[in-house]
Image (cartoon, rainbow, N blue to C red; front, side):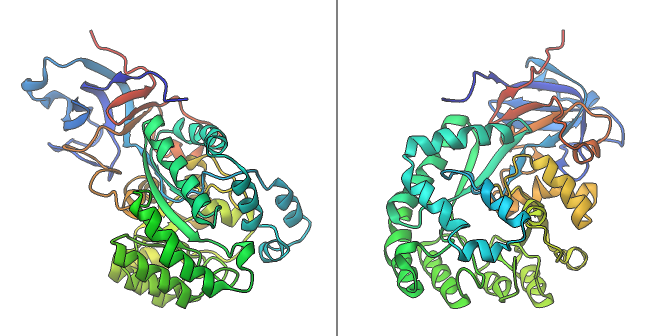
Length: 419
């Protein structure tokens, strides 16, 4: 299945409002004044006051945005979208009182998904991931990160990453692939953690990098996963290969992972409920993004909040993501995650919107191409028919009938023509 037929977005898009902080107009737009954007050959060429559209674009098709708000295309910067099976039974176990660690140590958790993923064919993994991606696309998603980490062996990690690449190619969306081979210890390496990390660094990661399947490298640094020393070994290998790193850090405890990640100029540290002041300072100095994952916090019924006020005071950019995965965040709505980041973590509406656009782009190393409306960038934007931007994070379960332009094509909505 490939993406549905779409039309070129080339033309002048009039009668719209530019989201504050998420656009760089070519010419200043007065507060409340109608704006316009020009798309030509799939690229944003100009944006500014509606009455100031350059005459050079007068010959282009005219589109009526009908007063909608324009934002950059949304970005989900932390997902585990490709996997086999599901883990609803673990949800029931946790409701009955089992902790995340107890489920994992009893053979559930990540290892359960490893068995299901290894048993699935590449086509089966694609078929199961496709409707999950479709749900996210319907909300205006234009870029997504997809991690491996449920194969934990070369052939199965390769299978996940190949499916991620295929999803991007066939569905017309920017996909950044992240190798998360250090997600959990595979069953065949029980009691031999160092042997597995050696194999990962010497065989798995170099092979997948040579095949062009890896954009970044991640590690789950936690007491039930991998140590600081093992994490650094993976990071050093990534550095030698010229790959950026990310880190699952501080979800269950503070092991100093954020400081280590910052030493390697990590794109992001994700979860960070137990992030320390030293970790915040290191992230600030390195320009590392804090990725908030309220879906996992909610599903696990966590009570230890991320240090939002301290991150805000330090000026550390905060992204928001679904963390879609079968065990701890079966979330398929980025707008819902933005709502939860506000209600659970205390983000403001502008912070939440920046978290699923501008800062999410930075967490993927895409800040020069995504997450901001600006001349010279690919036409990735969403038109929202709402009265005020706060509605995007206010509603629970309502998906606005938005118009989505992705990679210069109108993939959702009509782009109504003006006479």
